[in-house]
Image (tube, rainbow, N blue to C red; front, side, top):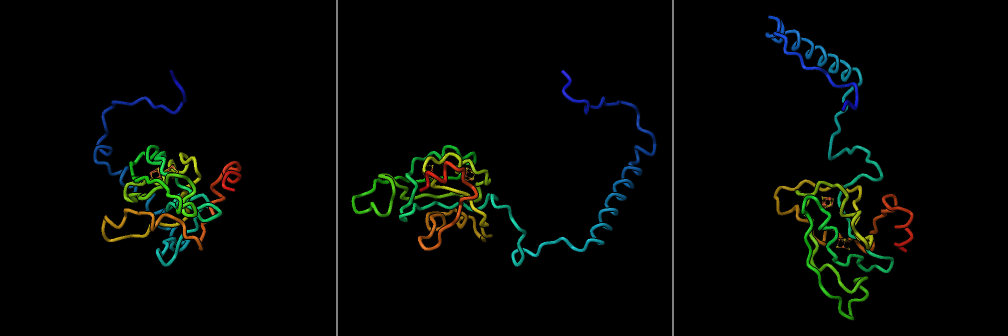
Length: 184
Ligand code: SF4
Ligand code: SF4
């Protein structure tokens, strides 16, 4: 069945001498390269001097994760593991623990993540963990993952991921209306 008119019939005709030398094709390629080089020169350099300079990012840009706290400062994550199951890169691992009576002010649910880690070298920033979370606990943010010189430093634990009590991260641009209501 033909879905579009874009398909081309492949021709098996013999190449001419100039075609077999590839000279016209090379010249055509160089012409395109030169045209772009001249355009770029006329426009001025578009190189961004990262990390001193950063490109503006969209509000819903998918960068480093945050594990959210609720309005009382308790960790929202209940270590259900749905984010880990949804993760196509198998980048998330966690160890669950039971909340004690004295920890009610620390963790929102009876179960919490004692250890929660994301391997940032595996992560493809797809956002599936965010979509899978039933507790609005994990979100991707517009923060960048910094460059590191050894692989072990890319395993981000709760010290990197849980938001600071006095430095909350606004994720409202990433939430649906329903999520915003549930967060309250
Ligand atoms: S953003 Fe995607 S790849 Fe990264 S941890 Fe979440 S689900 Fe896994
Ligand atoms: S972040 Fe969400 S989905 Fe992942 S374990 Fe915690 S509550 Fe479950």
